[in-house]
Amino acid sequence: MQISAAFPRYESFSPLVPVWCVTPGRPGCIHRFFDTSPVSPSGRYLAVFQLPYEDRLPTPGDAGRVVVIDLQTGEDRLVTETRGWETQMGANINWGGSDTELYFNDVDTETWIPFAWKLDPLSGRKTRLEGTVYHASPDGRRLISANMTTMRRTQPGYGVVVPDEHVRRNVGPAGDDGFHLTDTRTGRRRLLASIRELLAEADPPVLMDEPGRQAIYGFHGKFNPAGDWLMLSLRWFTAREEPVFDAFSRDDVEVRFAWVTMPLEGTRRHCAIGPELWERGGHHATWRPDGRRISMNLNIDRDVMRFCEVNADGSGLRKMREDLTGSGHPTVHRDGRHLITDTYTWEEVSFGDGTVPLRWVDLRTGQEQVAVRINTRPRSGISALRVDPHPAWDRSWRYVTFNGFVDGTRRVYIADMSGLLG
Image 1 (tube, one colour):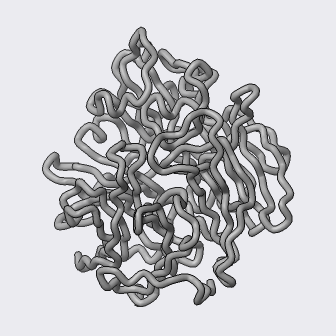
Image 2: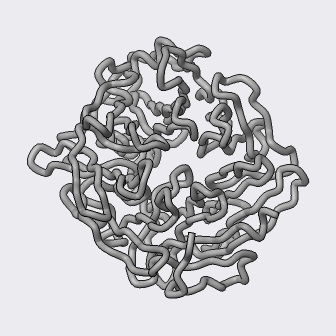
């Protein structure tokens, strides 16, 4: 990666590593999530989402922007607009296997059916796909996605917005809703695993009281680094007569969570992290680089959040260390020794003034450093409008991209972590 001198350096609070603001001229920009690099496979381009406004939630049909930045020259370019976005994940922009494959969501405003585009940002050529994208396989050949319109039943910010009357309601384990797989070569999608199948076949099982009385929805879906296993997130709450949106903010204790893992090929399904663990307190699971273990924050002993890991089949749950408090969106580096995470502004390890650390942790020694400190508190107090750094490694495992809220707007940054990796 070559980072142009045109990008201004971020030097507030004396970061331990070089940091550049890569969206200095575009307000309202975010990158996707802590499990997905916005840097293209070659390391030359960065894909970000630009919100059309920052002070309110999106309404159906509002258009946001997909922007591609040339890190070598410092130039940025609006490549297209999309109506398939929300405030936390934007349009779920994912790179495929090359710099000519960029995937993101959109919505047909005549039918209010969401779909994904396959875009070559260099030529502008676009191909419409049948399915939507939450996460792309590392080679770009497949997209996994739950129903993007129902995500805001439990929590807004992660899917797409359509009129409320076009959002389905699930009561009980649905056989026609769940996680769809899209073949990016043919554009066709298929139901890979229904909610009913995941609940019926997981071993160990998902512990759910009276499934027939629960409103059950799919949420996150993640390929492992090899692209041969998947993590699939289920969320549910007791069904009511009236339609429910944002159940998480209404009663976060009532919403239950589970991660089910499965190979891309084959029929094995495992509840790796069930509601009996989540209810202790926890968040933000993702694959470790080996693709066979999962990391997350979990209050495993019901005292304080810890960095934990578990095997994909649900065995081997353990704390990575006894003396570290978990926070934010943790990712273990490929070397297996280092971990990076951010924090929420309300978590104990934040600074209490709207700024948060990018925590650099040595799992071998327990040493912790503040690699970068940055403001993430926007003007609005609406939860779905919060700004999470979401630190994400590029494919070289040297650079980290993250979000901040600086000079009154959302901005995207890149940090060169090589000085801390020695």
